[in-house]
Length: 338
Image (cartoon, rainbow, N blue to C red; front, side, top):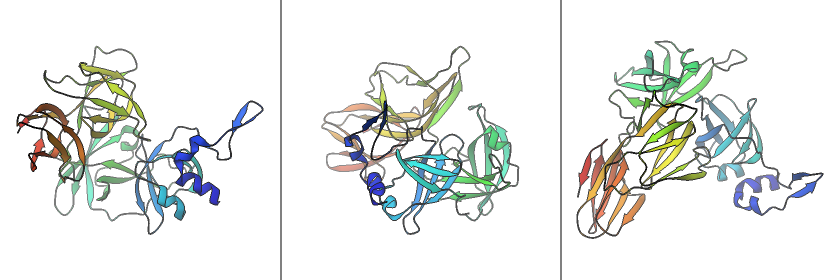
C-alpha cells in the first residue's frame, strides 16, 4: 500500500521506472491506466478526505473518499478515470475508490425555463431564478440531461466552483437521481464571479464541411498575440496557433487556450461551427516596459519591455507601469489604452 501511494505522490518518477518485457507485453512495477480519462477534479475537502470529480462531457458529479496520502497529492483539474461507479485512475496512476453522489447542498433556486440553445445544437439553455433575490442565471446543459429536467425543479449553487447543480435520472440504473454541475452565468451574461464573463460565442458555419470545427482568431492588424492550446483534462500541451492565421481548424472537443498567457478553460469546439473567444485589446503607449497581472495582482501573466498592443480575453486585469498598478477591464472588441 505504501508503494502504491508513493507512486501517486511522486508522479514525476513514473517515466524513470524501467518496464519489464514479458512475452511481447510491457509491464512495470507500477502499473498505469492507459484509458482516456473522462473526468477532472473540481473540489476537495482535505479535512474529510473527500474529492469531487466532474465528467467533462455530461457534467455528472462523482464524490469519493481518498486516503490521506492521495489527498496531499490530488490537485484541482487532475484527470480521473471512472468506470462502473469506481475511480480506476487519478493522473494516470491506478486507483480503486468507490464513487457516490456528492453530499447534497440546500437548494436556492428553481428552473424557470428550458429552451434550445441557438449557439450550441448539442445543448439546451436552462434559465434559473434565485428564490430569495430573484436574480436570473443560465446554464448550458446537454440535451439528453435537459430532457429529464422540468420547470419548477429545485437547483443548488456551489459557491466554491461557481456551478449550478441539478438532479437528473439520466444514466441512473437503480432509480436514484444523479448530480450534474454546470457553470452558471447571470441573465446579463456575467457569471456569479464578478471577474468572469461568458468567454466565447459559437456560430454555425453552413459552408463548412467535414468533421472539424474551428476557432476564430481574426484580430485587427498590429496586435501582438500568441495562442497555445491544451487538453483540459490533464493540461497536456497540444500546440500553438500561427500568429497570422484568421481561423484555426481543430477537432471537436473542449480545450484550454492560453491567450497572451491568460488561460481560457473548457472552450468548446463543435463540428461545423466556429468558436470565437471574446477578446479585447490593451494598448500600452506609455514609454518603458509593463507587467500584466490578474485583477488581484496575485498572478503575473506576462511582461513586455516596450509599448505594445496585445489581445486579451474579456475580464478584469491590472497593468503595472512605472511602479504603479492600474486596474482595467477588457470588454469584447474594445480597446483600453494606457
